[in-house]
Image 1 (cartoon, helix red, strand yellow):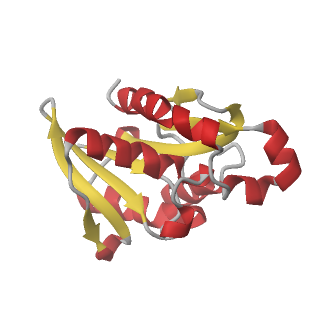
Image 2 (cartoon, helix red, strand yellow):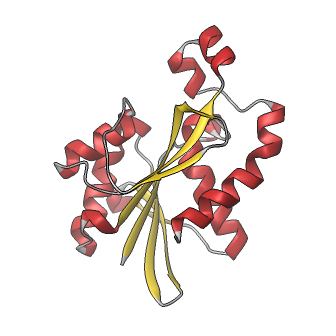
Image 3 (cartoon, rainbow, N blue to C red):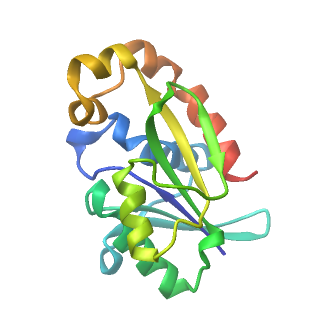
Length: 174
């Protein structure tokens, strides 16, 4: 069984913000394949359980804020007895150029507070992650980091999202 985690913030005010890149990838996947989301209040997450090419997958969007994602991830791991190596966390990365999709089998949080929360909850950073580049240096300099990650994509960036999200979905099943 694989656990696929999309990081983001709950609530309509965060839709299509850079910090919600993980949610966007999973929503794109669910729409593409006609999957349905369900609430899992016990774990403070929205989830879907699917069998794809003979493999069981659980997809989750933690519903605590981004910086508190570790709680939901660790609860799903324990409940379903999923080892860290079978987790994939999808998150934004403003240090990567917009549109770059980068997979790593393990690594550091690199300043990402969602990954820091997961590292703390798991006691390890030894799990795969898929980073979605949201970088826009000019905009980031003008806004500052906090406002930048909570900002919406520019119209030009938004037009490119379907292609980028499609690439990211492909990386989930690599």
